[in-house]
Amino acid sequence: MDVLDFPKETKPREIFAYTCERMAEPLIPLGFKYRKSKNDIVKTDRRFQYAIWFQPSIKFGSANFSVHVLVTSDELAAWRKRNGVENATDVVLGETLAALTHRAQEWPQYCVQTLAERERVIAEVTQQIHEFALPFFDRFQNLDDLVKDVRARGFLPHRKLGNRLHRKKDDEFCQCFAGDPA
Figure 1 (tube, rainbow, N blue to C red):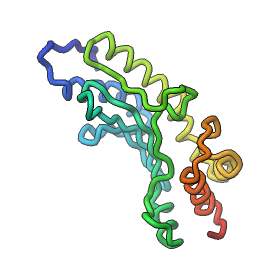
Figure 2: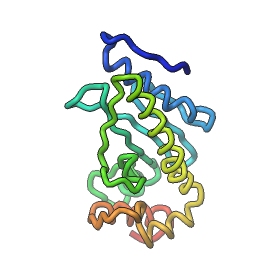
Figure 3: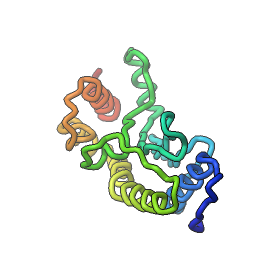
């Protein structure tokens, strides 16, 4: 896709959509699909759906956005329902892309209004997707090892979450995919 500079009167939503498409482009040969209507890039295998989701800022407009990763599983949702988990969802993990990195700022807002900002953001986010998100998604290909790792350290061991909600979701994942009793 060509690098575009937009006229000053261009709507922020158009710039945002172009930016998302540029970041999605290198992932398409890897089996991902770009869904413009949902601002995300998704890939599905037999057990999981992996998504990178671009969330426009409500406060600052569509020229500003944050980036999230999401892993979902129908199998986990069914396990949660069978085991009486309240508000059983299919979400294995949903976090900002920054949460997969070692950045201190977990909710960075990217601004893409100008050509220079846009090109910097596209390069930065694309690099983070390849360095952090894709390897994170790849971990799901060996469930036995992933379950052992999550049981021992959680999904994001570099984060000091200590949050009961995260630990509960980690435990549910392990019970579901390791066949542990509830």
